[in-house]
Image (tube, helix red, strand yellow):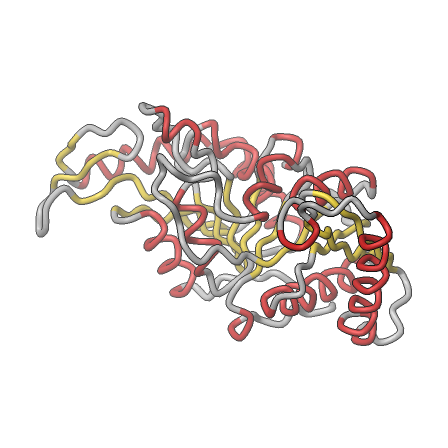
Length: 312
């Protein structure tokens, strides 16, 4: 079971959907909730002057300013704190956002990080406006030692009973570990597991083929790979489905999740390199799915450091 959850927030409306999930999960699983807000970046070394992440203004950091920031955050989540009545701790810090989130997660031995897909409301440029899945989210999802639950749309913010989990695989090493996490969740929730792979016909050997028989042969081959790699490890658990479609992977995953009435999507995050914001077209299928899915998405990374989930 999740024992410690870290909710990363800017304290703005862009994080409200993620806040709803974080507080709901904390209450449901009786977990400790850490609310972290990185309010600014130091302007100069050994200086009290910081650059406000929301406004871009330089402000002089002092105790009164910190109290003001904390008070504003408490007012923002006043109703959730009152309604859910869950143990929580507010962590305020300045620094590089993804670095501080990862540091807080390690320090507090966090089991799950909850984030909104939009980590900044600063949209002064077209590049930032286009780059909805921010560099903070990419860096956290890529480097976190625990799974990262990403809430991309308001419709994904209702964490109710989990009865259908979609696991999207690309057969990478990371996907093997993401499967282990998805299967543990499936047993914990007594849910149905939908194992899905999309054959990418937009690139590689299938890009120019018009022979459906070739694609059908590949579908049969992939189904066999799924049975060998994943079903053989499910210890007699029979509540599962295998589906292999062809198309653009992130599009097909979103469509499949919708048709399967998925409550949750689990994928491995593989972004190895982040392009500059002005060039970025989102670094991985995970991020594309986050933008489009009505279901929450859990990104799994650093498999060797994953904690086992209690099946209590």
